[in-house]
Image 1 (cartoon, chains in turn yellow, blue):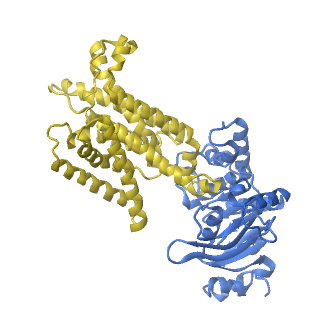
Image 2: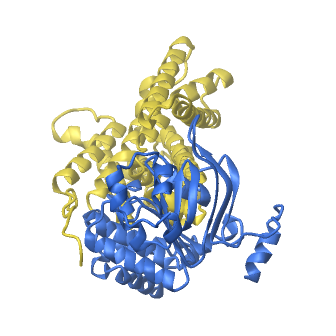
Image 3: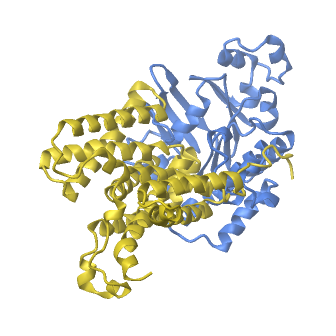
Length: 310
Length: 269
């Protein structure tokens, strides 16, 4: 764990951890509200957003990409709501229609535009490029105290750190609103809580987390982190507070183990090349969910229909 | 009474000649989910210190009336006042118990966790929950006979127990007006007894209670007043004079068998 680790592994792992936590936190509430697909939808519609941003600006700079992605995410949310209300279609189907159509449009746009001289392709959109987010200026752990070296940290780290901090702060601040309105929306309205704004705010926070994470790690991690850690956490406990804590633990575990397995796992089995870190992180989160399904203490809802009375 | 008058005066709405200080008053309330109205131009005024049953056939708009009065669903037109004040000035005085089936009981929380939600307006968004709050919540669970289940996950409770937890959450709100949507639907006999005892106790303390109610056989035993609804208001008044075969027929449109009506302890018309 010397200079080489700090140079090549520390920042990708940190970025993976922050992206995973930023997605898993809103994912808890989306899963409980049966809206988990919205994370899937957002991470897919990001593609046409960044392609359009590239076509307009002609560069792959971070800012236009993020604005394009955010614009596409907002467009998708509006389209989903419109289809739900005007077409009277159930939410899952509305999301499915919107994100597949927009993702397909993104692929078509990408094929038709001249992106041969820039690094913009479908594979990058799905898998990101976590391994490339290295910190070459670092010379060891002491570089963490060296302002010159710190200035050379990958931009993605700063962006995802800010987004993750904002998501954590919002979750803590609006905890009670989120809990009450997720459990019992009618009661929440009766208390005078702005349930519509709470639901919209949750989706917007999820969209911001998805876009920031997408920028660093691609959409595969985003999709996995919205659903796998919260779903696995639900099987570990019957308390919302503990569920969210478990989901953060699982997200961190997925990011760290996924990165390590991707980088070193193939070598253990005699293969020569590392595999995609983003793919492995998502796979580990799925494996954790599978283990929770098999061995989680609250995987069964025992006692339903217990004898009434005291 | 005077604070309510002040609130009504401050609401900025054209004050009626005699402001209705009833716990819940609706005027010209119309709600629509689509083309056809679910509730049409209903006037109703619930009496203070009384238990009122809201009865009518399926699709009569009983739940809709409660939800629209509380602003849970938007209303097309009409006015609602709570103790003479607009709804947002009177939220602290109302406790609303939605239908049990309207929530997902697999939600990760405990019985006492649900009751603590009833303290939201006292604790606020970021106020700390103290031991005193927990003691209040536990006392409310005790009033519905559920103190022994405080730490039980809500999905592991029976339907009747879940309904009692909902009632305990309403008790924690320490309201003046309790609005319950089918509190007796699908509960066991012991729970029905426990709930009606608590509600009657509230009434005896001077609180006002209104329930969407389905079981016509118990209207006379449980309630003081009855509101017959079938999209429009059919009749409203004391059970003794209003719970008549004529009003039942008017509300249910002859859908009740004559023999069934005979079995109800009806007021003589």
